Image 1: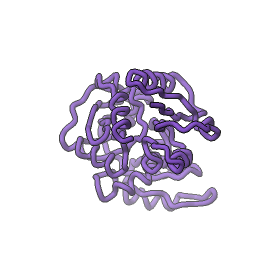
Image 2: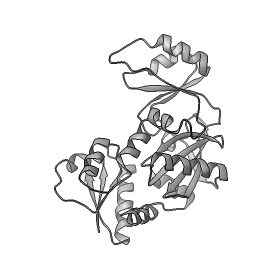
Image 3: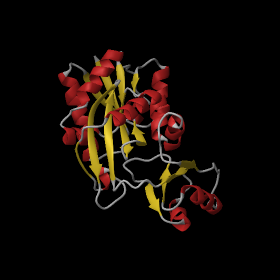
Length: 270
């Protein structure tokens, strides 16, 4: 059994290499030859694997592999829905409770969004949260107290505005594999409203409530995920869904190694 672990050619660092190494070692224990390939290398790869574990967000490449008949986990559709926060919101709008959200109107060049932000502020109230539609580790998420602060973070990238839900810098990350909740952790940041560990947050093992499990399972099912990390605020409000969450953090916090569970689910599906 041969699989490819597809990662981004242009991302490097210990947090990535440690994850890749762990996935490869886990696969080896399960008699799977897992070969590390970057998204650039895959454009010129002639060998066809039995499956691809797609730990990247290059949706076009994922779809190209699917078109060739290669089983890809997670699917191109699922990755696309999770990577774009606007798409995630719309896919789950009538399914789960989410922060009140206004997606910025599309523009094809630099525009003055002042009027839009003023109107959005009247609906959402201040402070509010601005998020780039695509981004990771909370790096493109900002809490703004007025129109001028929002304008400071507006770029040519698509963005959305959300009501601010006060939760003391806490949230819950739930990892789902197949149709099961397999691990959970509570994250907290004493100095930032974003709980991400990359931003200085800490994490501890957590026993999710029945409601939180229901939210996580529904989100993953609706988005078509084989596995995913679901972030929940205030016990009942979906924050976001990750198609390739950094599973090392939840392993260290909860004591649950998600990697073999992911491979078991992939083997079951192929």
